[in-house]
Image (cartoon, rainbow, N blue to C red; front, top):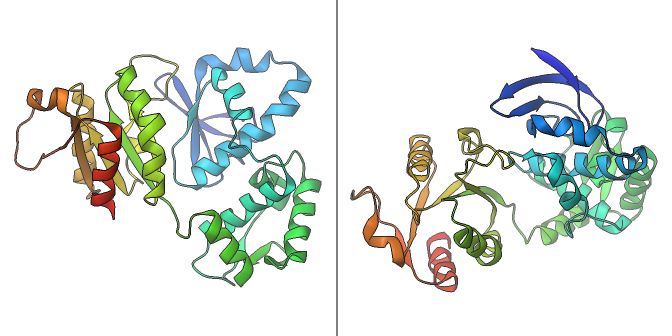
Length: 296
């Protein structure tokens, strides 16, 4: 197995090749998982100015860690770096960064007072999107002083107040990973991203949209993205064979599948079987209501 330094956390780890991507296994960006980097990205990333790397790489590392820790599979290319760093989802203030640590402990606990080991702490400052260990230690001390957590060496515990704060940030419950499968139609993609994915998150899921594409710069349409999901929404609009296949794979893993199709395509389904009875929708607003009824 080949070993390389991760560009974002500078740890040497094993990698494997999958199509046009290199899979980085178990680096500090994803200690218990992996992420995929488009192989054509090395040259443009390495050619960035030193200061730009210093400003960007710890943020990208933190973003990868947060998403993969939440159970999402993540792939990126050089073209994605600017959008990640400039995303409004990236925490900037010390308070917001501290909230990310509370949420991490919340995801890894079943109740207040349960121990969570963070080791090595010296390589875990990406948990708070911090540029260095000093800022992470400052955030930890602040959360302890605010009585949100208890620290015993490398072991951390949420107090009742910390647990309640983290639960409030998460909307009162832990979000479950969800995959939305769809064809590569751009107008359909816009509808889902702008109007439906935010609604699905309100229903208790972390939605991730996968669409079949032959464009290399998009993440691979891989079955690995399905296996840890708790729900699949398969939109049959556009009649993508990959949507049928991937949703069928999910059913084989006993993952629940909700089928949907826009009314414009409802009479053109490739497969007409009694087990596939899609929700037929006209507008995004209508589909949001129907999905809420299914998921409530």
